[in-house]
Image 1: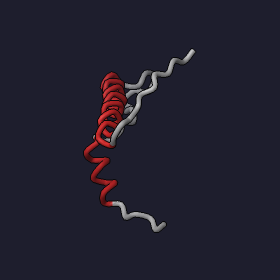
Image 2: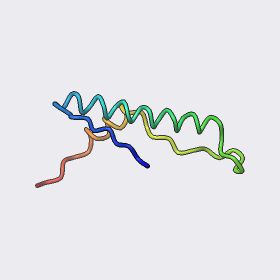
Image 3: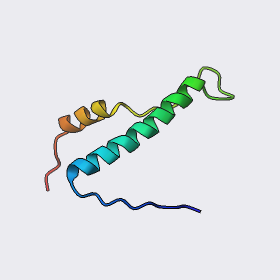
Length: 67
């Protein structure tokens, strides 16, 4: 079973904060798994999301597509 908890996002700041919190949670889990290593694959690394600031900088450098 899956339980969903709806959240009303009232403004862009709230949306951004919730997204950042979820992103950091997922990235933190990936970093933990990477530090513990990949079972059965000696010296292999787990993929890890970039830090959010790095992701945001890349997004700003990407030109917008014409509409």
